[in-house]
Length: 315
Image (cartoon, rainbow, N blue to C red; front, side, top):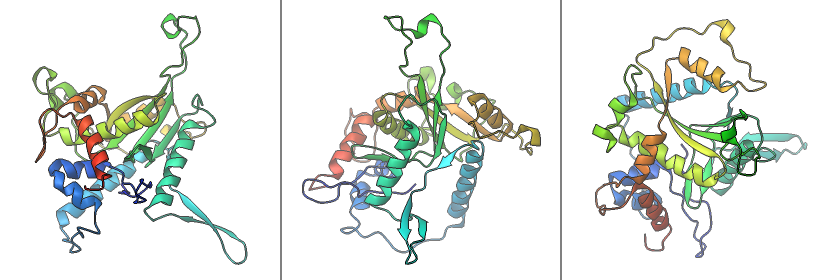
């Protein structure tokens, strides 16, 4: 994910900084590293790169699995801002933006918001975005997949308000899907693999991934308060055996496929899509510890404090 930390202008005319998912991960290992990461002019990063073949292979495998997961949403659109320029002959040329900074992030955020909202927030069109960008305050996230799903009314009495009118509250679901190359075994349950006894806490080996999706859910939820934002992890399922898709299972993309169509594709793939709403709520409300942390601060409070501290004069 592009790590854009300079976007807005603060009162001192210094570009304000965004707290991103990668910066959160960095700060959880050591709070001081956040200071180094957001002030490269004061603390120049090490330019010497170590070519570790294991790390390189893991990175390549992660990218391949990410592209594979995108293929399971054939109607999906990658958010990739373009700059419109003109040559001397007045021919219009569209160039992809490969820069970091205010223009790039602004375009990406605007494109994402326009795609999700359509003409208005009740647009019934399903929309799936890859690498869309969402901001709220000094938070910036770029979820792997954002999937907007409109649940049409079933006309039962529970869906009507006190005035007898159909309630549209949370009729639109926005799924935040975090793709991870860490394998999962669907023969086992989330309760047994991710929760400690009696669901009092999250198992340590799954906590980093859940904090990733929790941070993104927090930001997306605040940016789109009229949507019901849900949290998902998409991972390779070692309980499945890969097989080539049959030609008669191709999904049409216009109109967009239904959720059932997508579920069918995922079921026949080597991936699994897990709903982690309950785990994310626990992660947001759980006290987190990291080198130099203070007792009694929840993850949600900690990231809010970090975002604020990043933009103080004396970081």
